[in-house]
Length: 326
Image 1: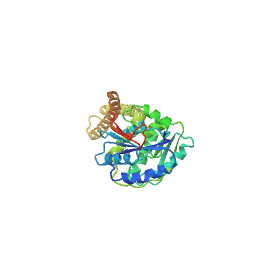
Image 2: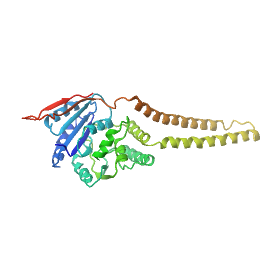
Image 3: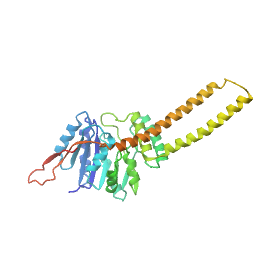
Image 4: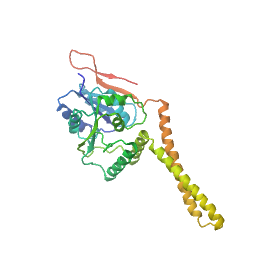
């Protein structure tokens, strides 16, 4: 039967916590009393995560599917691959580290049944370090001002998507994208709810400070031209200021005469302008780089195998099949 609920979970080097995830996830979904499926996407893990996922597939082949990448393509690409495999009317995304309690899934489903097509989540009390919490709030404000995408807590994975939103996302072929923001742009009736947040069950965060900055920079440049427009305004303002300074120096040269006292001030101004120019070149390069990656037309990810139950009817026990895709 076609499932009503699809749960997509990206996995990357999570062998230490997968068994605890299974012990909490499946009972929480069984308690819903609806048809469901769980789709794990292994994003090129270098530990035993693929083997553990395969074992879980053999235990629950009726509700479990496993997508195996042949390399590491990133969390968002793993989610997109999971979206393409989903069949449910409501799709839930969940982290594998149990920071998002699986027991909270029913809250999102209940909200979706009220008529919303996208439900985000806000962590009640973040169990992260102080610098991660502060940096996340700061980037949330900056992103909302630039892109006008209203997500109170953009870093929380626990979200629900309607079938219509998922189908639109699957039609997109962007090389770099931020899925929650993309879903927000497609949703007709989005909302948010407050959910619990727990400490990481095992392992450590896969996002460093650089990765978080990179992710937010991708988000801003991927959904808005405002950085380029803002830099253009800065360039115009500096041009007027530079022209005024040049006129002032010429006047002083004829009135006061030659002087060298302000040479270091001129150096400071020159270095400031060079910094602005280099930043502008980098900003333009970011947009050009996105275009370059898009026009190459390379696959966003490569699926090595999909573990799923065979669709062929059998007389005895269910048979499983290993479908290879390229």
